[in-house]
Length: 77
Image (tube, rainbow, N blue to C red):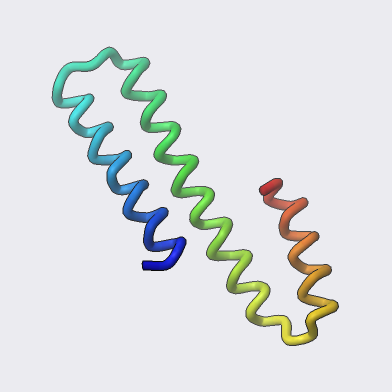
């Protein structure tokens, strides 16, 4: 399983845990905090996918390195 697939599986687990917390009557603040964490995990996965796709479009290694630096600054990751 690749990195993105593992991250997606982990995010799915987070969302399922949020659902259990909600159904179990956990305090709203706890549920919302975990929901925010799951949302950020999905955002991180999206950024990684965008970076990978953009870098695949660039064939020149020097330009690819420059693009990776720009994307890192843009996404701060």
